[in-house]
Amino acid sequence: MKNLLSLTDITRTELNDLLELATQMRRMVLADYKRGPQLIGQAVGGVWKKPCTASAAIQLATAYLSGTCVPLYDVEDELAQGLALDSMGVSTLVMQCDNDNIFRTLSLRCRAGIVNGGSRRYDPIGVLADLLTLCVKADGISNLNVVAVGNRDANKVEELTHCLRLFGSDLVWYLPTEDMATARRGVVLDNIRAAFAGADAVIDLGLTAFSEYDKYYGSSGGITRDLMDTARVHCPLLGANTVVEGALIKEYEYSALSARHGCYVAAAMAVLYALQRK
Image: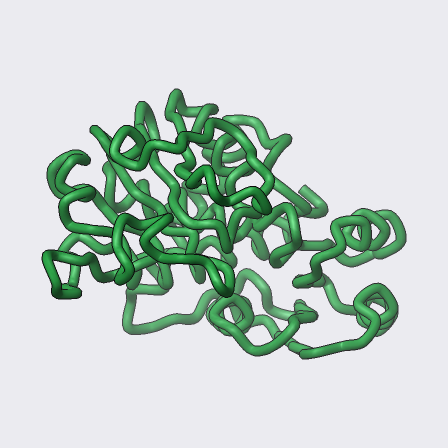
């Protein structure tokens, strides 16, 4: 694997190999001593809109594997900056950019491996992190019924749908009928109770600015406990750590939010190492 632009063409064997590698990396993330030799002598360039959890995870992933990370923020021309970093000799370039065409151009013109760190349509490391979290919290990703709610991180839906289907699992996306701006992908329901009924896991994608919480979550404070109770017992919740119970917002005891942070670093480590082995 030289580049990782999306997971939509990945095979089950390739995905399984990445998840197994990420599982091994997660042990390092959770260990007291975090230092492996996999990226010694390697430099990772990062281009980000602004400092964020994803950019921090890439820096940590590189450091844990003994590499060097050079992050850049708020650049005016992503393509020009990516080509410049490649000319400077980085081994891998991780970029966050809305324009998917830039990633294809970079993959054709650069010697470095190119990783999509989040675009308008795809988010491969984020999806790997979600899948690894499901492996940890739902005992694997086979034969699951997963429901996604929200419209902010919709760039993960297509890849999640593809990857889950490889393991005989299904993703259902709940969107209210009032949301006409979000492009529908995969299986979309407009009945929130039907979407949650019997779900093995719930992924909260978050909301874009000015979206009405009650339309997407069932209440103005977030996902209701009543909806979570219609899912399976101990249903993991990714992307949020609270639910609304009556008039109160409470911590959800089966939230996988913190676990996913560690899984994101592990997924990033797996991707960086896999590209280094190309």
